[in-house]
Image (tube, rainbow, N blue to C red):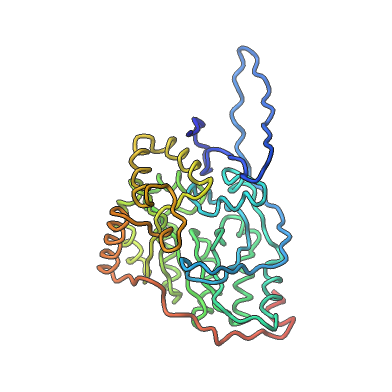
Length: 359
């Protein structure tokens, strides 16, 4: 059942649905309102950052749907607040809600670079591309202060280790110096995720992510610096942003992107109800059509977790989206699929306590 709660300015989720692992729940004590008094407005949830006492930093996966086998996530949760984010359910493992908690209770790993240094020095380590941006945006707003992503890139340069970066944030421009130095050695690629060119739609879908214009400027800046730059049109949401496919690809091609890909909206676990609430608040008249098209592309369900299907879906609607995307990308000279592999042969652990460690 969709909530009747109005949207919260600057936040993506409309509710704080409990963690699926909690056996009990608690409700806030709301003070009584005396007759004639105006009720207090709801208190906006503030962002807090906690320390994640991580002991390892490299995550590994064997999914055939992902173009990388290992990743590093310096943060948990994401302040961008994208309502559709597939990472939201992971907050339940911390006994937090995948709703508002995911975008307001954040975790930072201040020792991320040190942990990476230690793992890369292990005698049995064999280099594979490390991906930044698998389960949280590495350039979300708190990166401005914590600078953990920058420290990881410094380690990559120090070790000669290849990296790929996926982000929605123009903050990536801050690290062009490191990324361009890596790219010059065939050790880095960047990818910007652009969901819409409509600022109003962006504000409700991705309330604290940078504007579409800022992301296009970031694409241009990265490309101008010689960094291979791709764009991910993701997620494509039926009857919400699917009409923008061609215009987004035209804009990113003009900005200098050389590759492009797409992902169809996924609604696993709690995201189904969170997205239902978003539709009720922001697209009430289109809600039935949106959900119907999602089900059409997901075998009659709102989520299809099978490998080979979860990213692109199936059926007539998904096939039509795929053909439109391929035709536009081909017309604009945007390559499909993975770029040429990065160079693994340059990996060399430097002497302990090397010069870059001073920074």
